[in-house]
Length: 243
Length: 243
DNA sequence: ACCTGAACACCGTTCAAGT
DNA sequence: ACCTGAACACCGTTCAAGT
Image 1 (cartoon, helix red, strand yellow):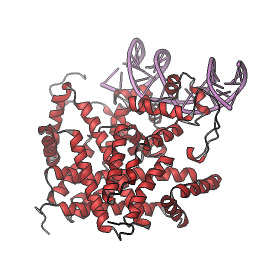
Image 2 (spheres, chains in turn purple, orange, red, cyan):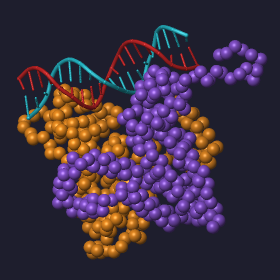
Image 3 (cartoon, helix red, strand yellow):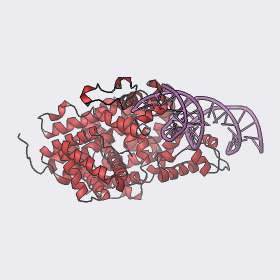
Image 4 (tube, protein in one colour):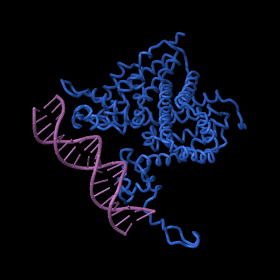
């Protein structure tokens, strides 16, 4: 505590500029490392050395690496709820846009998915994202249990789709090397024998030299349209829907 | 140690003699440890000591811990494709049943989700599961790109829904202790202030002392029904649909 | 209050050496 | 062929001690 003074306001703020560290700086560095090198590249020691500090000092701001990951998760979730949220579009476009921005964020930070599973997710940005979705759906007429279920349906599709996409990309990255083309082709032949439909789909994809980006977007939009159609059919009323 | 390759499945297993270890025994032990203690509890040294062997010896059968996780993943995927697959039900019940068994498996082995994201998934059971889904949808009349997209839609929903469920459970487990009831209530009050809709939904859930199992099942079925409705609407023809 | 330095109890992986 | 034992280069976390 600094020397006492007649009033807090007569004394300048604590010399906080001397602090080399802060929770925000640590989280920002963690996100940068995760983006650049994935979950494997992240260690407390790495973050500390990037910040010119000892590993132990991080624990002054963060109780555990797990907690740091929770903070990093919520940090990037902040990218989803943009200013486009309050648009006056119909509920379909509004919710679809939210889902697309959510997906885009997960593709920018794929490490999020590897930590989402068993981890609680109650940060301010996660809550704001949920509120944004609930607002759209509530205006569209959903309430009570259907409101929860409708939002969950769209959110779950986003994370499921991006999970599948990153898994597909990982497989392509590893078999993409020229050294493995022969092996991969042989493996594909075997697959086609035992699994005719799958083999046909895989060779169709290989033959068309498919653009993975576009194909993933197409599948994402397909299921999203199915879901939104389903929600539309179950939409009870149009309270607040001025259109 | 075997030569590295892009995926375990592109390389035959090492020939066998009488030996204390085998790939199957190692994978079985890994799955058991993962089920009992989660991904954190798994280490090469732990598996080795469980099998009465040194850590280094595992590398005779497996090139890397990552590859072992690929094998463990496919191992539990084998639980999904049961004998019920070839039932003569309509395509809706058949596909829905497959999705439900998939979900049940993921709930039994929640560690799968934390490894699904960046990992290739080309094991025999993953392929068999895909073929089963393609068979159902193909008989229902889907073909080409819609066939892929329809299967992806259902699969993605399964993994997204279980991801959300495990995350919810993790949050409940941590705030469930009696010491945190006060803190949690205060936090909920704050949430309700800034996020009225979310706050309302959360206190509705808390007030009803909601059964998480049932609620998760309900949401899962809700979105699944939306998807199946959407697929039905997009179903081009009924080739092979004798009904 | 904030950070260092060293320590503790772990990791995955490699590899010569044994059998 | 299969496994040991020891080593290497890491981890997350704690904590007395400094400033």
